[in-house]
Length: 273
Image (cartoon, rainbow, N blue to C red; front, side, top):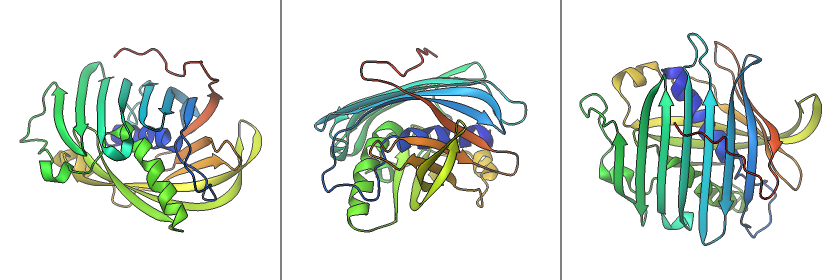
């Protein structure tokens, strides 16, 4: 379970990567249209795919991602998900979010509506047992974001941090069950190898900190010294997330961009868990 939670977090980070901008960005933050297909692998073994679409229209935004991966004995379990969001200006805190997913054949649905930065509607099917998973309080959830709105809002936060010359910042995200803090560190430029090509890139480090909504078993399985997730972006005008990687003791989990979708081309996988 701990590995599965890590993988879901990593998928969120990878979607987030699509919205990052370069440390030397211009003063104006322009709306972004991005779609990409990524391959997931574990120690060189391919086991899944991620499709992501993110559209920022300035006053409105919408996004979606599809994830599917097969089980790897004692490492990850079989999973597929389809997640969407739409809202008005991420900074306003207005969004409608829905995620439908199936893990080990068991379906689950999370639905949330934020208005003015506060969670106004919240459904989890099947419902959680609060005795096993104590929910975050309403006060704790103020100013948090669902996982996809978080990706859009993070771009604004990064822009502000870079203009201020800040290398680190953090935000809080609520997936409908768990609340955690995401911590970001902008690092150095380097040359990396992607699909047998050497590419100029910029590295960013990502870490998570559990805050609320975790079961006792989940908390016990989280390693306080777990390695950070490393993300590399193309060091050019496109600034695409190229690779995401984390290396715990049991192997290397990697997500690599295999195809950037053209305008009008869907990057979603057509999943309906």
